[in-house]
Image (cartoon, rainbow, N blue to C red; front, top):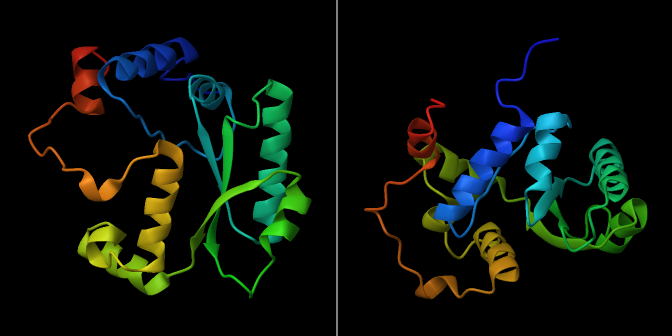
Length: 173
């Protein structure tokens, strides 16, 4: 078994340092649940669990929810989002909720054309097609979490404090 580069203690130190600098921190973890992943999840205020409507993905979602229940995470900490959702063509939200015994927080529609354009252009979907259903879904998710009107926000392009700069300062590069 290989040694972990980042121990749970180092992960906790990094996340706590980030919390001193940033109002919001997004961490995209692997789907492998191990000691490091649990350490990350323990330090999260909110976990967005993504699933699709296929049986394998929903089974994995159910297993994750059961694990989170065993760990002691309350339902307010876990928000389930159904990705690539096609309304009226797949399982209904009610059927999904019955399958996983949890409430669905939100859905992201299956909009391949807008998404592939964004990927190919190296932009986010809101820049490529702000009126698309997928751009609106992302804004709705962010608004539902943060309660912020995103049309009034301005980006600060001069802010250069990122994770790599922080890791460099911590001697972890």
